[in-house]
Image (tube, rainbow over all chains, first blue to last red; front, side, top):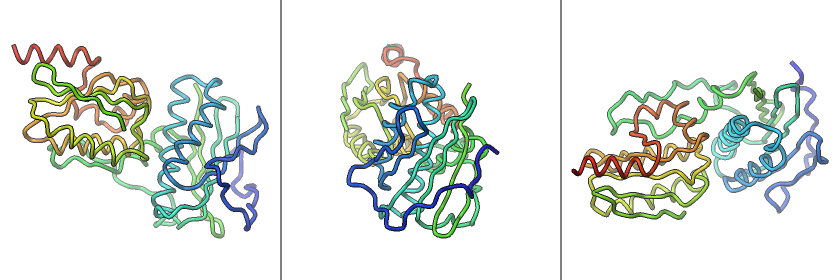
Length: 166
Length: 115
């Protein structure tokens, strides 16, 4: 493992989300650390920032995969960790040889099982009336991300994974 | 949420005039599509050629629209851009929808069906 969960620097307890939806704390060319409020429009804004910062260095396919996986993980945090009530999300992206290492931290509810969710893959071989309208997001993450890990540390959820670049 | 609807050879052709169908707009998209689909037609073709990003919430909304049209009418898709096509492929939803390579092909299919 190129990174250790225990090495995650503690966030100041007094830290509050900024008024602007995303704050860029990394210098140009350095690894990214973005802080955002947990709502869908802020997630959309942060994805645009990530694409602007990293998109030109990635293939169209890799940029698309990164955007999709980050969207699914952050929207899960908005919905399930913070229950739509808002909160703070920290997104860190570090460059590795042929991969991007991503870590998302929030201070919302823990994952219900205490570990990574293991839902059944939504079935599509069904009559139209019975087709699932949800449950796709986590499978998209599982299909596209590598080395996916979850840990509850003190009052925080930490999800990390790698996006392999080809 | 900009959706442009037009009747073409028995099909209601709806172009999504937005780059994203994501969690931020999924509910609005679903509601607006249901409203537009009140216009009678045999088929509804959703033209996604301007859409560059669909997440699982957007996908769920598209499935919900298809379910609301069934069983009387089908929802067909056209003009999927590469990242959008990938979401349908990963979730196996590409096997559920009729997917036309281009909006023009969907219109052509309508002419053939109608002729």
